[in-house]
Length: 161
Image 1 (tube, rainbow, N blue to C red):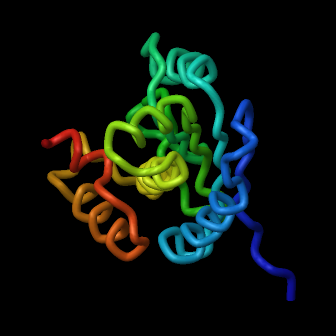
Image 2: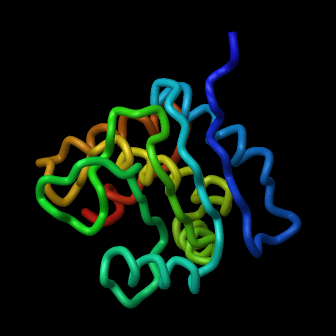
């Protein structure tokens, strides 16, 4: 029996001393534990790419730390970013490594941990959660998963501080 497709992580312009293998292992762990085996793809790149994606898909002309793009599916509300679908591939996540590194310094941990925090946050969005509209459901899920995965404070928690 063939194994399920694996999540992939693509790195662009990342320092040589950054542990790519640790991030790839973490992506597989997220796939198995959080996404219940459903794969996703993650691009770790620079601010210019995040700015371009943010402008193209969300109409925001600025870089950000993480973006999520659910796999295309029917969208009765005609939003620019498609709704998640029940198919096997969840979608794509894009992370700005320079922002991850700066946020890691600001919050007192390493860039690898910050990339993991951003990846978890992005994955929860791919699973259909939205902290702007769900009355705290995503915040609770993020906190629960951060504890299980051994991660420090997450994005939603920081934004409320």
